[in-house]
Amino acid sequence: MRLKDKVAVITGSSRGIGRAIAEEFSKQGAKLVVTYNTNSVDAGKVVDNIISSGGDAIAFKLDVRDRQNVKNIFNETRKHFGRVDVLVNNAGINKRGFFEEITDEDWDLIMAVNLKGPFVCCQEVFPCMIEQKAGRIINIASVAGQYHGPKTVHYAVSKAGLISLTKVLSRYGAPHNILVNAVAPGIILTDQTRDELNSPAGDRIVDMTLLKRPGNLADIASTTVFLASDEQNYITGQVISVSGGAYLG
Ligand code: NDP
Image (tube, rainbow, N blue to C red; front, top):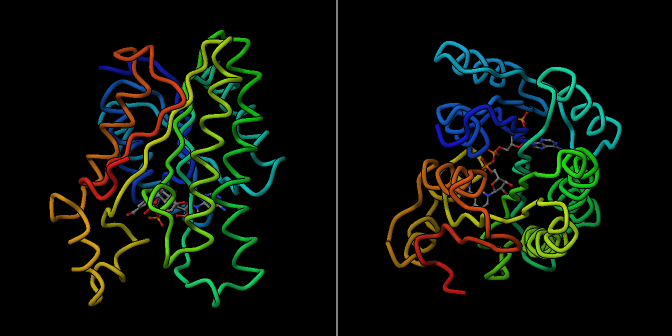
């Protein structure tokens, strides 16, 4: 029960890494706001699993590109649970492509979801955390933002931007006891990576890790729990690369 009674909003928690984080948070005693963009059925299953295991969770539709939608989520969370202790900016998308292949539309979409979305979520949750005199924000970045591509130009830039946002906001958060950190996953098997991991490039990607294997959802979830918990009260503005040594920093 490392997160007992903490209220956590996890963006993009209908599946993949976000779902694993939501379920682990619940096991650790947190009350969950699960959000989905298109996948209401899967989000409903996540909430049902949590509730049938004795936890507390509610699902909302959230498109992080829509500021009013983001505002409403935090208002609804406060109405339902009374507070917001933890925000995990997990929602993210990828479209692999080399430099010369990226269209304006692809660039704008990736930036809107992966970088502006977390910015808006942070901006909208900050006043609540300031009022509470405490808060934790964990941004799910990527080793791509540390390693810098090359096959994911816009994605890598968006995640490098998210790492920078993490560091800048740790300065704004510190006077209010709001700790802002990032987790940078390496290659984790989810819907986002399945095709690439199963393609001929898959072995090469795995070979880039020192541990010579993809990571598990649990590796990301447990690191995120640690950053959200009271086990640590002195880490802010940092990026933890959970990448099997694909990035050595
Ligand atoms: P998935 O594709 O499995 O899940 C993405 C989640 O984001 C879904 O819940 C989806 O909702 C939600 N989402 C998509 N677009 C939006 C939007 N506009 N607004 C709100 N929510 C949205 O991704 P992963 O679990 O693989 O990735 C999760 C995070 O981890 C991402 O930020 C990703 O970049 C990062 N990451 C993943 C790695 C990996 O190896 N898998 C490696 C490094 C980083 P819905 O289901 O409703 O469509």
